[in-house]
Length: 160
Length: 444
Image 1 (cartoon, rainbow over the protein chains, first blue to last red):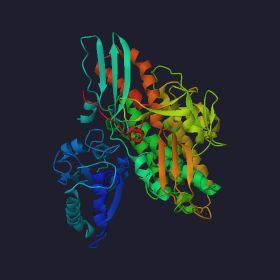
Image 2 (image 1 turned 180 degrees about the vertical axis):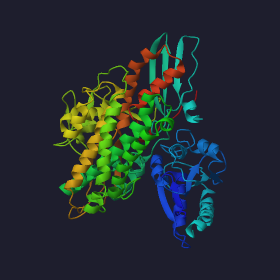
Image 3 (image 1 turned 30 degrees about the vertical axis):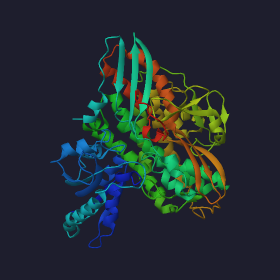
């Protein structure tokens, strides 16, 4: 039997669009169709390993910067999209804002054999990352869209 | 392929006019982002500039106009690695304004919370950031491919700190339970007792970790450090005490700004802090040099078995000091856990009043100073934050000036790697050290 799917939002709520993962979680909290396992992963990437360990399926939500228009939604899966994941979410590259990035955490999880067999990443293209609460136009709409998609994707797990 | 490490190690070729410029544009495995520019002319090191280019952090300005009660949760966002340190310096500074005296039970819980952060932060640095340098791996991930059991041990130790932080702080990232006057809620005895077995396992693992890292080769040149740390009344320093140095100084945290001066250097938007016109070192090596007598018997005994001597005079030995402090923090956590009785009230009542207050606490990376000025209704009028990395930055440059002459025979790429490793041995958290500063840029 599958363990329930876990949904992990990443990002810094006080850094503009970097709050994307957190805001998708807020949207998901309003869902009343079935219970969801929601986790605020913050910005400390290595701790993510503890959330991944022992899971069969996870959905991660993070802001990404890949030169697309702000608000663009990327749905990435492993192993098909390893290239993009490492390129866009490797912390020490210019494109991520985390101390130990999602890319590193997932790669380390794979190396140690604890990466969930089904790992999906929703990346939303960010615009501004200045300190504060303001968001870029286009991003807010995408947050709603991603939340709806995640509910559709998580549904079958909740009935498993 | 590790894309980042390629970027990090990109070095500029030598110049025909005998001027050689080594440029590290991004440093691998340093929290935040930094850059180092070195200029060599006629075989002599002419200039060393450690540069910061993480977007300036607005926190000091961001806090202005907020209510004092919002500060602990807000400053926890400055750093994903050491949020507790920011919370601790903030509440102690604010409590000094409001005349709050913290009862022993709350004081002990704050110490336990700080132990959790030391464990998490130091284990991360030892296992994922610095050990790969000693063992010749490009990253912690590369090390995990060859030594998965070692990395798993580190991750499990870190998790013990994580669990402690989650119980005390409400969650593992950006803890939310700390408030002026105490905590919003405190754990039950049973909740903490559940952690005992895992903390005992981690304490044994910490002894093994210390033996492992003390066997590494420390090859960097010795330095004549001025050490700075807090000195606790009877315990290894975390939340209180005057600032002391190895040259006999004894400075109240409220006098910090009369002795330590922050200055802007043109090539960096982090401020550099100096003491008596020069560099100094804060952090685990300084704490251990100045407070060895306050370590627990177990930590002293294990350190004795390494046959290393204090004070450490090489930056690379920071890994040993961190390992000793992980062992101490686990030992201290177990002591606090045994003695724990939930305080009568999670927090004592606080009445706002106008004034200014300062505090310094020992973040994993060293002394973290905060000063606040508050209006009568509790509105923050001014916030000043001096993180440990900005204090150590001048010291890092001084180290590199000494290290570089021995590296001139190396290729630019190898020289860059050596410099990068040296800077990393300080465990700099460059994103925290970056201050917002108004500046004008002149285009020529």
